[in-house]
Length: 343
Image 1: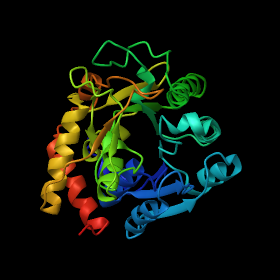
Image 2: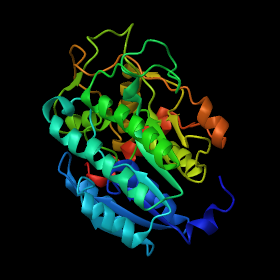
Image 3: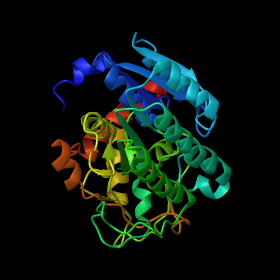
């Protein structure tokens, strides 16, 4: 990490969009713990339980260095006012309409937040220059690529969901603005992030909810245990560590734009992950937990495997995620049982 990060962090403002979201909350908390000033923006949409978003915000508001603004990044005048008032040194754009399957139901939300919203952030960085713009891309840009592990140099022009298409668009937009206006920008292709206070729409969280409601879980792999889905599950602390190191590592060159994978570099079979979740919940509750499973075909937009080549990230900032799924899922299970007061 940049040795001056602590000192610099106390004099500059970090602007985090999507601050009430899963990754946004953990990143903001980490920066605040280091003594940095953080301005957070979020529209608190109801894509998932807003109580969880407010619970995250309550924790962030305990820090003196935190300022929260409830706003939508698709509101361009509001975004410009925030830049004018808070003069951020580093901007981290994590506000986005998330979810692959939901993009089939509500495409408007993806265009509004992921395209218009990100355009507004780029425009604000153009007129109010920043040291570094870091933005969320996604492993979904790799589509149904068969070559694994996925490397940043791979062909990513065949997205299989609208969500993936918006994230690929973000990379192209950021590259263009870096080229035209010299905005140092870094895109992060996240690989299946999980952990405590995570997103309820993610499989591991949804499986846990269903179990405690006495409902079966649906697994979209055709019941194929031999050619089971592989996912590069990445624990939230590893994501944040990689991000914090990259914040002070703005790209240079003729076009100051770059993209990194942030993944675990150790894909697990979906069924192995589910078994590890059952074991973690068994330990957290003190009783045996076994999910009632229903197997269904792969859904449109889903991909058979995600697997990150993290060599570029390691080379840039000397970091490689290392949290095992057993350790990460245990932390999630312990949090879930306490937060939801499971008997």
